[in-house]
Image (tube, rainbow, N blue to C red; front, side, top):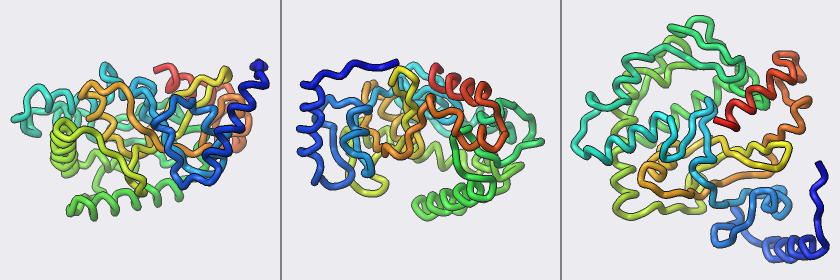
Length: 275
């Protein structure tokens, strides 16, 4: 579908381009009402930060981060707000670990497996360019970083590397992180910075009509706490080079390599996008 563009709108884009051309990275659009699509053209190779509605944010499994969403961390944050004295053993996170330890949902294949049987480390999503070894290495880097930051030694003793985030030793740590975060944001508000880990980072999903949704990559605890506190928008750091366009489904790695058909890949996109 061709979207009509007036000369005035083109002039406005070029005016903004000149304004942000020499800006540092990430380019900060928080004080403007610029759309993600406009930001792409203004910052083709740089990171930028925009405000996004929390109910437009998703996990890679399709769970919404909206205040009424079904993401586990949002539910946990709301529980902590209702009962600040609640312990880990009383939380939904503890019940989740007890009931689902070893279960795994592979969004890329749409398959659900019990007890970690048959779980692979293939690309989690059809547009993910990483292969099995790259994905496993990425998970290990994340675990090492979290261990260092939180001064803990979390093991990788789950049924598989893909499910070891469900390791029971991780539960109390996740609960403590969320409890502190909810308290800090409730008291001081949400504060971002331009550092490497200063924002919630995400990948944009763009439908054929240029409607956007966002898959959260890092900062899951932060966006869940913000949403549970009733804050409607959250600053997201994005990069135009990493966006996922449904119009390019034929060129996604899983389709190109024959793991999925274009129809199957489209279904994965729509399941996350519309959740």
